[in-house]
Length: 390
Image 1 (tube, rainbow, N blue to C red):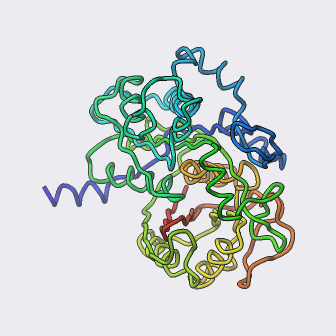
Image 2: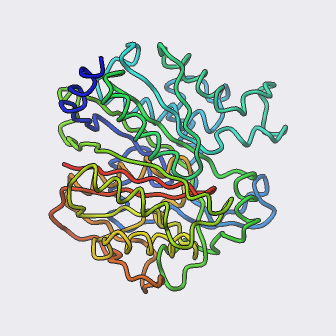
């Protein structure tokens, strides 16, 4: 059995069969990338007393468009906003992948940090089900809705949740446990999330500015992303063909919220990822939250890994920090960069703002690309890195 697993690992290429992005910039990957190319941001000033007594800046999914899209699948009033964006994202990705979702060889993973956390508010929770707030309930709902053989696995580990879910999915395929894995991630801008980040004084009064000298903090965002991984090349969308390499995670246990001052945990996963994949890095998709400590820590870790001259960007200026969805959305955007040989600019960046110089991409430009290193870090000292390639 062990020999069979080793052979399967050597022979298996993990490919992105299909994907979807839902954010304030659109309900498909194509629409999101088109608006990123146009340097548009979905972050704007909101006045919504159901979330905050004061105005706030965030990127939010359009409710009317979401309900109109979901109406073709089920009655919108029977599902929460979180459930609706997850289902719509998965449905669009499945439609373009041509895999059998009902097969025992297909597995689902849900990535989220807070899920239906807004249901803690009894005014919002009109379902009469106190357990619906739990992520395992979302997984059970997904099983019923899509007619799955097994209940989806839940991955919830702060801001690295999305990358961690993709790493786990690729490992399961390499082990021969499944032929296809559908990875979906989502989070919302809620009163709970907004008040939490407000308590850290970490929110920007305006669209965020990753790695910039004058950055003030992060911008929250909401959305969903879905990636379908497969070992079967015949299932791959003609416009894709991006391979998912090896990835790793770590925890530096530095602080409950603050990142490591020397970037040790992120540095370790970057080195392990580079050593295992044995490929040069053409482009880095950073976490880039635009908070003083995160951006500084990333600059230290990237420099320690000798990657300070590699072109690097952050997508947070376009659709904000989408928490459990962020890693998945940014892997998809990185795959689009590779497919189109485009380096997307870092919206909001103008002047260097970290002690260790970085090759931050200012404006979108063409480049010959074969590999992308995606990195992320989160509360509790967690870190993750993953390499994708043509």
